[in-house]
Length: 89
Ligand SMILES: [Zn+2]
Image 1 (cartoon, rainbow, N blue to C red):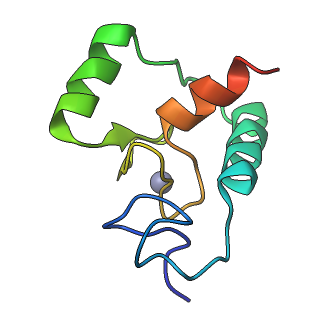
Image 2: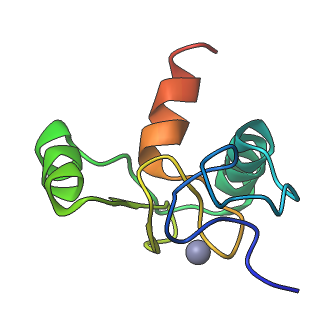
Image 3: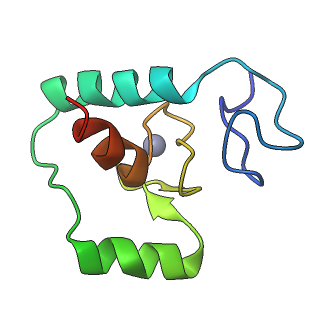
């Protein structure tokens, strides 16, 4: 089973991303679940996020390097997705 995200395109619905096994919403939900059972994480500050953006990617909460609007092979959404979702909670 391959990773549930698209390494090159950064998201379900992007060109070339057709595995469709995980949606952005599911990845974000999985990440919030992960927060509940993992301590020691902290949201990145805005400068850090800007640095990641400048490099064309983002970190997931478990420190994996992912696409800005993607998620890592462990199913954790990027901080950009998590923080965007958190604003709507
Ligand atoms: Zn990971």
